[in-house]
Image 1 (cartoon, one colour):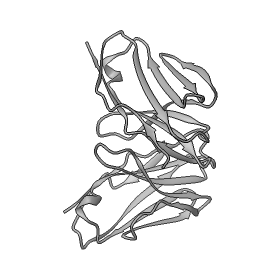
Image 2 (cartoon, helix red, strand yellow; image 1 turned 30 degrees about the vertical axis):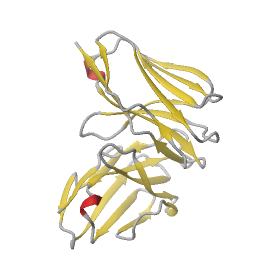
Image 3 (cartoon, each protein chain N blue to C red; image 1 turned 135 degrees about the vertical axis):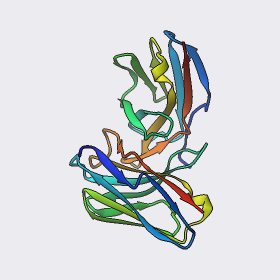
Image 4 (cartoon, rainbow over the protein chains, first blue to last red; image 1 turned 90 degrees about the horizontal axis):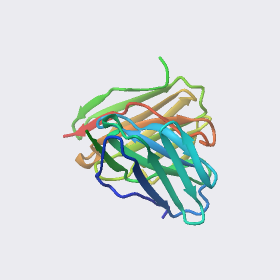
Length: 110
Length: 113
C-alpha cells in the first residue's frame, strides 16, 4: 500500500513565525513531490513542487526533500493569517499518479 | 474560461437517481483525473485518463462510470449511489506524466439522500 503520511494538526503558530509542515512517504520509487494548499470549502491549489534532494525556495515557502529518509517538508516564513488552511503533501507513484496525505491544518493567529 | 471547470458545484440526489458530473479543462493538458475527498480521509484517486484512454480504475464501484470523449472533457456518471458516496468530487488535469503536478477544478459537493 503506497502511503503518504502527515500529522493532521492543527498546527498553531503566531503571525510572523515560521510554520513547519512535515510529510513521510512509503514508496521509495516516488520521484516528484508536491505541496498543495486547500482553504475550507475550496479545491487544492499547487504551491510547491520538488524533485531532487535538498531545498527549493519560492518566496516565503521552502520545500525540503530527503529521499534517503523518505521525508518532505514545507517551511512557511513570516506566516500570515491568510496562510491558515490545510496543506496537502503528495507524491507520485507509477510515474504519473499522485497519492495524497490527509493534510495538516495550519492556524496562524494574530 | 481558464483552468479546470467543474459543474455543478453542488448536487443533491436520491439513491435511485441518475446524474452526471462534468469537467472541462482549458490548459491543453493530456491527462485528466477524478478524485474523491471525504472528511478526514486522504484524496482518493478514482480514475485516470491519458489521451482519452482510461489507464486507471482504482477499484471504484460500478455505480460510478467515467467518460472521456476528448482530452478536454471528462464526465462522471452516477447511478444508484449510497449515502456513503456523499463527498467532494474533484477533477484534475495535467500534462501527460503529471510531472508538473495537477491542476484541480473547484469540485462538486455531492450529497446522496
